[in-house]
Image 1 (tube, rainbow, N blue to C red):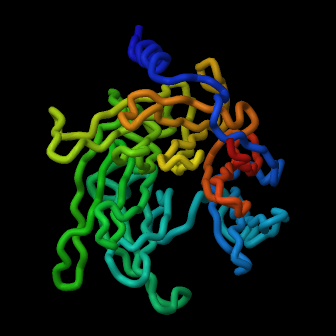
Image 2 (image 1 turned 90 degrees about the vertical axis):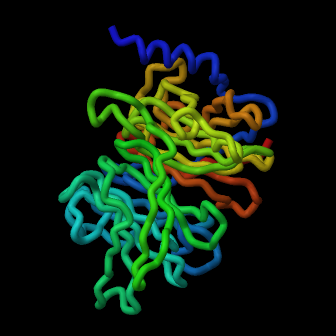
Amino acid sequence: MNRQPILLALATHFLLSLTAGAAEFPKFETKTLDPEVGKVCYAVTLADVDGDGKLDIVAVTENRVLWYQAPDWKRRVIIEDQTERDNVCIAPLEPWTHRMRFGYVTGGKRPQLVVSPLNKTQGEGVRLLAFDIPVSPKSEKWTPRVMNASMNRMHNHWHLDWDGNGIDDTVTSSQEGVHLITPGAIRDGVANWLTTKLGNGATGDKPETKGAGEIKVGKLKNGPRFITTVEPMHGQACAVYVEPKAGEKTADGLWPRLVIDATLNRGHALWTCDIDGDGGDEIVLGFSDPGPGPIKGPGVFIYKADDATATKWTKYTIDDGGMATEDLICADLTGDGKIDIVAGGRASHNVKLYVNGGK
């Protein structure tokens, strides 16, 4: 009998309040923007598509890229049936390409397109590639640079200026765990990157039970930075890694890991932002299949740290059962200064906007 999931669930019961709502936390109004976007809504993002100064919502399905025009969210088609079916993103040279993000990872004036494949095609690991954007993107070659080639099953990556030097660093979630990739010295015009391991992720005997799948970085109110993950890839656990204090060391040199919820099923979407406006970031999470806990889901949930130590978290239910979350993103979409949530569904085939109504 495998006792680890049982013990983990018991520990989670004490660490996490499963209240569906509590005093002094924002209430959300659910707006269904598209009840049937396609077979799967693979990804959602935000962009000012029409240049009117308002963020529009963009969704990717198995055969279309759609945008929902602010402020009434009318659906419009960008492309349809112009790529091979069921690609979650598009890039040359890497058939396992899974995530693509723009970041200023070389310190130049133009960003790079950073691509993380899910599985390796050569060598010991996947090639995390940074493509320089040419002056003429349609006609000139996009030159790739290898940022790292040592990790496997790299399910996601994220960019942020980790050390405040004006250059984007990269955090990754892979079979090998949680890593930080920072730019090193530039030799002969070529950037070199340094990789630091911050956490192991989930432990297991098989590749699919190890490491981490989703990753984001946040900051606690009056406290340190933290990393949050879904573990393992498409996993059942939401974990938090809190940055040690300056000069403080752990026994293994890694950041302390805490599982705050072990009742997910196919966790697949993660964000960090200050939902309630108190100066500290919350975790916004979505999973796509019904889970084993008292709140089954699938849906969208928010976790708030009870204090600056992040040893206890409270869970708030935003959508329980109405969103088989494949992806989500957060931003102020109504112009009231409050952070809203957009989510896209797999089995639910839908796109929803959750409007933050405040406390």
